[in-house]
Length: 206
Image (cartoon, rainbow, N blue to C red; front, top):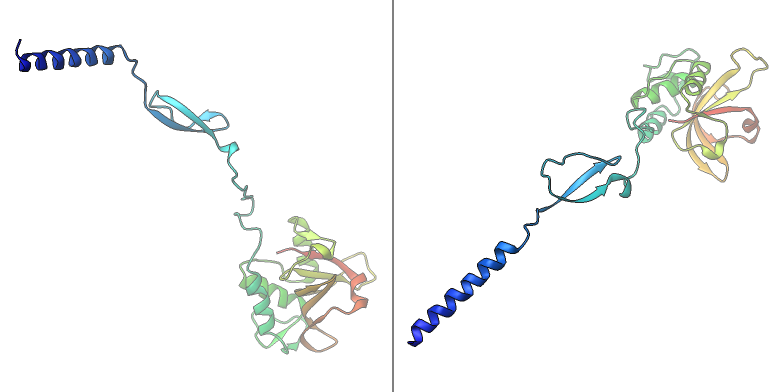
């Protein structure tokens, strides 16, 4: 036998052996990840070997979309609107559209409106609005800049809320506010006097 014939025989034998091995090997389906939500597959159209991945196993923060996914309105807008009214004259019953006059609740309504939050006109109505919408807290430790604080200075059980202000600073349990003050006859910013804290009826969280 010539050397080239021996070479061909070896190649043919090797090719035949590989073909036989391949025909006996099992065919595995492709590995395709399958996303599951609540243990229910989203798509299983491939009928392939699955590597299951459950959303519950992932560290995905939850978001409450009960109010559109936005539980906080524009704090900067609220504070900046209030500051734009500093030293403007106090006038009871002032229009919320006025840039010259303000009373306490027209100021808070104006600031809220500019931030996209529509609240009622009077301090009592605003207090009730936050209360009815689950946005009223009674502890100033939970307050933040941009929230509205409501006061009860009246000796009456009917419509007791007579004043409101916008929180612009918090320090060691003290709060700084912007308010349209009748006694000062203008819009001012100050740290809340100690005598005011006992009259706080609630804080509207924006």
